[in-house]
Length: 152
Image 1: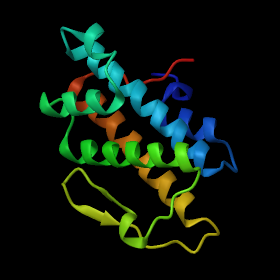
Image 2: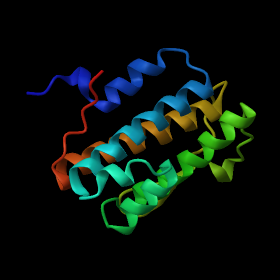
Image 3: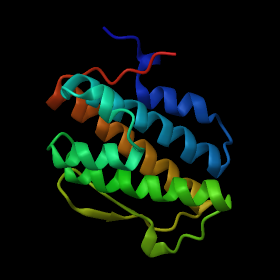
């Protein structure tokens, strides 16, 4: 039985803490997704050393083109990367309700209803990132047979 403290979703929750700001929620999630993307590259690509030096976006495009990343995860990860790029340059994002969506493994687009929380953007970011990390973890385990654990 694996140590659950190494599960990437547990690590994400532990790293962002109880009252994170939006920047923390997005940056930590993006960091862990890139960690998993690199694990896939090093486990499935013969030229992993070259590919691992590419930008995040290029690595994600490469894995999608090689059919090593399902389309729903690809779309969600690309969306996360856009959010990350915006938030690190502006420290805030003005999301419209139509922007609060993501894709399920069936390919179905899910629209998140604006929550009644004080910070609907943070709620959306957490759902998008945790959902994407969970989907990526499950895909790695079940389809690619790669351990998605994160070790400090």
